[in-house]
Length: 380
Ligand code: ADP
Ligand code: MG
Image 1: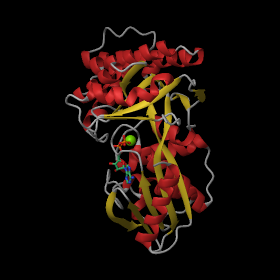
Image 2: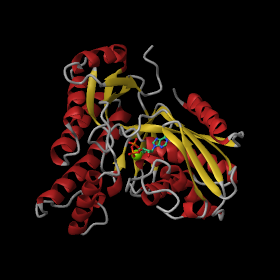
Image 3: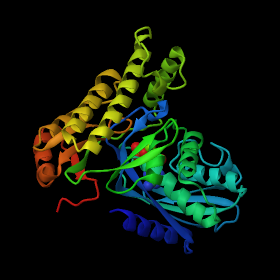
Image 4: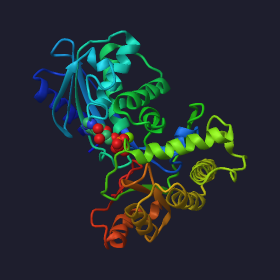
């Protein structure tokens, strides 16, 4: 599984569904966030890394003139619509439909390049588990953006591509996501963390020390981000920023939160504390202090669980199981929460035994849980 396999399966699917060869292909990675969740939409700092599992997209000019057609190995059938209808959210493809993520990106690029109403055929093949907090949606969007930009000869700066994909997810999929996922899919480098400042879009690559291994812990449970719980947290954070008179909670670091109503105070407490933890984790990574990074990850999980309340019993259980294994610096839920995956930072010398130890510790009641290494190094 990974880039070559995703692309090959996308090209095979294209030939099978559309009966003619594709013209171009693109690929993009899913991501795991080491620390900094539910802060990207408040101008915060995040520290994700690409995971090597991603999405391949094969594309060609429409075999049916003026129509946008999307196929995926993950879903049955081909979604087809008029290219002009596809320009309007909800008209060519229902909002939130699996094909809306790809068709939305086509529409955004078409609007930019003056190619509205043009036909495109797309075939997708992903290896990121869907709805697990590893950002299968941004992998789809950026893979489509790369393929369609190649097809139409459109040049986009990396951050412009990330913002275009984010806009497509907002408008066409109806998911009010932050910028982290799309930016990591565009800018991420295997084996490096991406320190991304979501207030101004600036970023640096922070090399993961050789002494560290990163594991994803998959609970096997799935979430739907378009669900109300994510939007409700986001709205509470926005109300808190409004009440404090700041544009985003990033600008509320030194502000007294005690006068806020409970829900808004919890939102502001989590977001401001989490941004401080991310900054401290970046410094600790650079200093090689993995023990401190691990303690910050543990504190992040506690805040997401107890203050922002976006964890769930399965996530808490895999985090506890990981912490019980030898050589683990820290563990926390990752992504939007409510199910999906957690992440563990492990001493590289203990990486070989981690999966077995995790399985042993998670046996009671967590039969679907799995752990896999994602920092680009095989456990051998
Ligand atoms: P996450 O990004 O954490 O995996 P989301 O809910 O944000 O979860 O996005 C999942 C949605 O993205 C799926 O429900 C589907 O609509 C779309 N998607 C993801 N992977 C694929 C794929 N391989 N083919 C088609 N659509 C996909
Ligand atoms: Mg997503």
